[in-house]
Picture 1 (cartoon, rainbow, N blue to C red):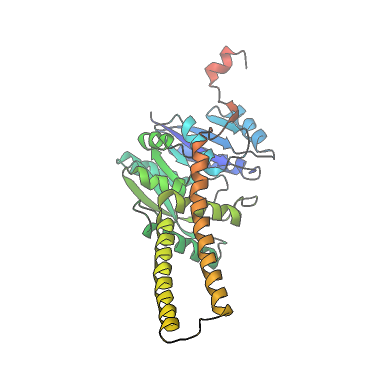
Picture 2 (cartoon, rainbow, N blue to C red; picture 1 turned 180 degrees about the vertical axis):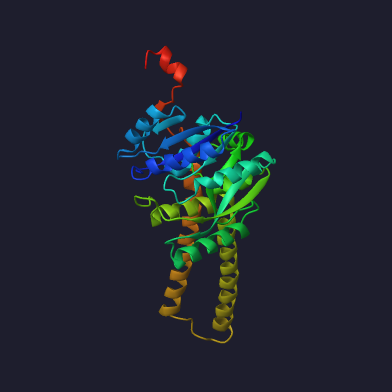
Length: 321
């Protein structure tokens, strides 16, 4: 019997964990020919989420809780899930029930047909504003045009990964992670499925504008050096234009006796060139900062506690009823 690990990274999701478990339990009954492991990864929750998972574990030995020492972010929490997943395949799903667990059954069917990465693409998301949709679509278009790595727009982390894909992702230990890009970078056979995202079953979203901006910056700096090239090209163009203008002013002054442009034009030139220099330094700084983080070679995460579900035989041997 093949084993499938359901990886659930969560942060302060006490309102939805019970509902999620019920949906996953219904899935396991539908797919009774497979063995399931529920791996919950706590990414620094401060509510009762851990207590709820441990209470569920008392009833279901398939539940495992990986309690990280603090909040490391979803990208690192997923990697921790890959590190501890024991299944022949693993499914990453959010705890908020915006992604339907029932779709996992179809993912398994395509996995059995030889696909190593069966990913879900949301067609619609209830409650998502038009501006957010526009910015997301524009971002993915720009990112795809700037890199050779295939980017799958609107494909999140909700996907089934074969063991060989999991092992490949485990080898990529970079700190500034953009897992959506890593899925495409590792390759392997992929299958696309579609779903309509529901509203959150409870609680509030953990994503803020600053978090989304940082994730977007990681995507750009992780998979392309185009910003550096663009800044270099702009610098070259400005230098050529500046040299031509310098020759024009020199000729007008020496041969025609024309007066040199005064204070306004001088200030415009200084401010324009100064702005370009600051932008270029900022771009270089973003890349340099990421190099600095990688060179420190720090572990990506630490584990506070690992609660592995006990089987009935384990409980009997330990004297439990």
